[in-house]
Length: 528
Picture (cartoon, rainbow, N blue to C red):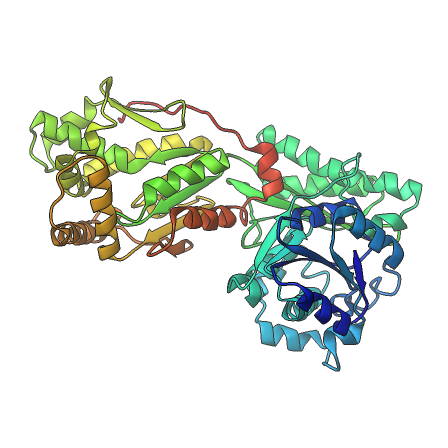
């Protein structure tokens, strides 16, 4: 491993060989948690650079900048053992030059979102996150990495960087978060842990225990943020720990959650002797829900199926439910309109969803498997008129909400994020041009062996479907206000799924989800 001491040596090392750089920025005091970051950064054909820089701009008055652990020889040994190719020890002037280190300047230039620092550590460490943004911007400008690897322990810092650092939200490089690495007693590995006496170390171990107690309370039915926060404070105060905060927040927005409804993060900061320690726990009142909406032909079904498989969630194809009703109406030869006949048909129809061995959705009407029949062209042509009927939407929306009570779904349709699951953790609106969607429809029909009309006819049919979906009185097609719009023109399916998976892990940490997700439930029930 190469040891670099200044910018000239760094620049020479960067220029010595082509290929992507994977970067692990640290403040030193390297431990097993840092080694996990370095190992995650390693890969074929890449070089891994570790930086060790105790950044003065993120320490406030009275904080431990001068006493922060500094062990350069030990850091080099730890990085080398984990597989780093180089470790860089810049001085302050190597990073900042003669620049003014006033963090208010960084805040103005980088436009940090004030809402992200009103909770958790923000009020307790004024200027801290501005200093983090300032140093990260300069490090990335110098290194120009393809990938930056950071730990999930400071979730607020990760969220601020994702949403406020141009290199990340403009996708000039990718941020890879790595799950928290914990010691045997559950305390996250941290550089400041080395400053604790044996007695203080035993006290600190009560921090993760208090969070586990809060999780147990949630399993027992507790949902009040006030009760959960007070439970943690009481446990820690009784152990002699000085608590800065115990706060339940939305993991993406970092705004307070009065009640646990879905997924939330319970963050805690305490003082133990000379050290200030952080920890958090994700809490669930139900499994997460991902709602994927968009017009016909944007790849919703394929994307949803693949994303659900990756995350261990169930794929709920609500479009198939509308197709099933359309198929039933065609079979009954009832007119496609509201009225008594439609109401009777809905009351006597049992719609059942199950999942096959490969995770595929199987849909049955009154005991008959119609999974293939609902894909016939005559059903496709009828669906827009059926989906626009208020009685049909009301009945199916009610059934879909029943399916979603326990969560654990990736649900696709045209009103998932706006009407059916407005509290979904992630709401996505896939879109593409009419021409692109017509080409996809033609390819799908060819694969199914169906007669192919002229491309112009398909485009006209898709445009008409869009108009009907967007102008219907009941739950018209539109993006959710707090959703994410993803254009799929010219983008491969796997790339879209990658992007949605990354968005999911901004709501629920990868480390938490890999430990807690559940799959394999079978949802079924009468449509009424």
